[in-house]
Amino acid sequence: MPRTTSTLTISVPPEMLDELERVRREEHRTRSELMREALRVYFSSRIPERTPTAAELRAIRRGRAAFARGDYVTLDELRHELGTAPCRSRKKSA
Image (cartoon, rainbow, N blue to C red; front, side):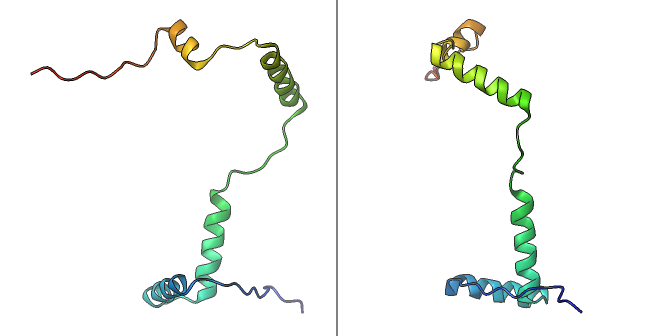
């Protein structure tokens, strides 16, 4: 029967090991359980990588070409056009 798990050896600083042991004792869990959970949390928090569609790639190329031609506005110009320029803070009057 094939194994359902693999063994992994890692190195951690002594302080991290102390913290791992403290949590392990408090939660009555094994090191392996804690490390599996840590890896699950890490993997689930990453933004998934996805391949852009052909339409998305065409749009990116068009945008890059427009930028290369100088066909763009700066954020300050856009804010000015929209009338949403950030307000400058002033001192409060007494």
